[in-house]
Image 1 (cartoon, rainbow, N blue to C red):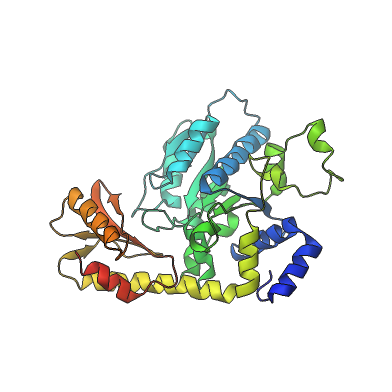
Image 2: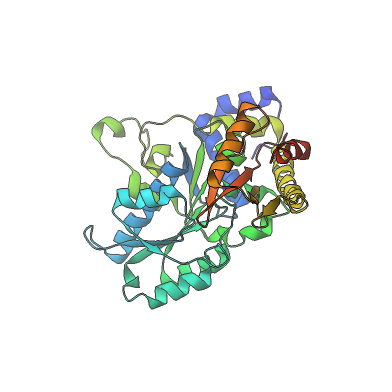
Length: 358
């Protein structure tokens, strides 16, 4: 991966190699962060929803080939109640049922997954499991290593949704929490979240891209003529549900080429440190209560004595006064407040100003 370069050097390389090569260079960098194999690959799509859809279509089609399951046979995918809403939507779209696995300590574990599969008399129709590398609401990382072991034991496709939290792979302070991610059959990371890319940029990677191509490649006379060598050409349209596409990964490539990866590491570590400092500040503020220790950069807390309406009124007042924007969220049936730190220029003084208004 290009880690430092002048703008002129970067433009020269891009002109010589082309935008798809630039996207693939960034994808290779992300795959290396996750310790995926050398032949891993994929494409950029619009967001986590599109990536999850494409990955789980690949899982379904792979299971049909490997297990000989017909299109009308019952098929299920295991997930926890912390999975992103796009996963449930994907299952509705592709005609696959969910197998809900109870969480342990707010995360999906290999032990709970094995127990659920073992107790289910119809577990043969479960083809995949979705693990989360940083839940959107609370930044919780599932037991990726344990889940990977169970997935291998039961012959399941392992899909890791790291749309928000996957970028934490860059940070030495939390890197060990992602142990097991290297076993993912498919992986999603959204650079338009914690890698500071513009909106509409999600990286979708496969351990074996050939399986994705078998599931997604479209063939027609008006398409085949565009490929000069259909056996070797890398067509990003083959690895997701899309056909028409633009080079969504190019802005990220330019940013990495100009700033270098160390700037990204520093920015991510700053957000992680700020989350820890904020948790301590909340603990020391009498009217506030920390709900759980932050794993990444989402910090959940409650204001003692407040109703759901109080949280919403406070949030709107903060926004109107231009002090900040802290949207309420739900946690175990309760309305609470949530900080989500991503921007590297957010400071602890900014947080103090917000907390002073509670």
